[in-house]
Image (cartoon, rainbow, N blue to C red; front, side, top):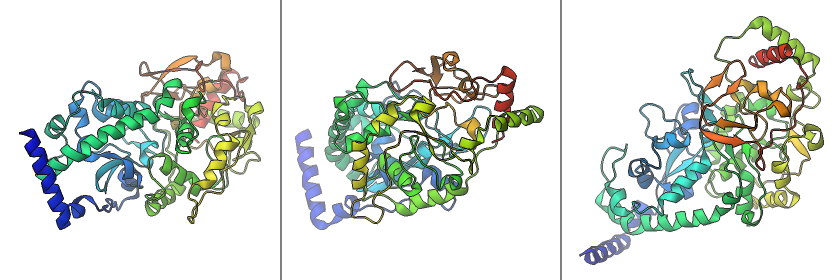
Length: 460
């Protein structure tokens, strides 16, 4: 009987294709949802990353089908879901043949703070664990529960059932293709098995680019993991060297490379949507510190800041602001710097080849870039690899900084300034790419001076 149904389904699809109906339903790409509000566009708008994205009809069933693998729904992987919304912040849907989900700028640049009502747009997404999310998606493909019958019967937040034609197409074409695709994705990402897990709030875009350029990251153990950066107040970064290691000074190339790393292709890049986010981010203000500030102590901290000439590197207009401090001087973990080798960076000149936006600005640097401290209170954990949980720890000597700590919560410590978790992802600074050494500036302050400086930094 099942064979008869399969044959009838194939015959029906052939007939529909001959009439052009199948092409009209599944062969055309759709326009993305447009949002009138810039912040809604930032949170839910498409940038073209859905082109190779997960089929939405299947994706929306996964938390129900695998409650053991995703006990908190998409929150299991740190995604934040606003009340009344089907999609988490940072996830968009767009039709490329079929509706697919993809990431946007809000995926890596939206955060929450315990006790603060509003989400913080532009902040590093300190709870989002893209590595665990990828493992979840690829892991379901080999789970015996991942069958067309279970998927098409599973409930979801989406009201309304799946149409009869969709059921045929998904059962016999989309889901079998999805299984083979996920298995290939798992194989392509086996390089991750030889690296420390990136954990929440971090990503290894360097090795993802190496995979894209067929540079075989599985053949070595190079680590390029970094924290998500903030994405606000970009106007003051217009002439600064960008990315953690200062390998590019073009905001446009930085934005496009992020979109490509997030799943877009050169053909699918939605330049208008990306430029809209870029325009918003130019003047988007850093978040104000949401808790009380001791103004007298902050004034004393400002004097420390000025006396130690912190602004030389961290204030726009400072002589070293936006420049790169050599690795021999800053002394932080050099793995990310070394991964972005001359051979890798030369490949970036091929990105967008023949297009008006072809990349021309990538270069090899010799250290890590000095950046502004705007909204620094919301940007922990600190250093380029997120190896120091709080500002208080950053101003301690490397030997006094914690060797292990938990990441992935939004519990904020207003005294030490940073996220302090009692459980979650265990971060080990002894593993490759995770060193918390270096950046010795301010580590000789007295305890009183340290507390004062931290109080002042809350006002930045």
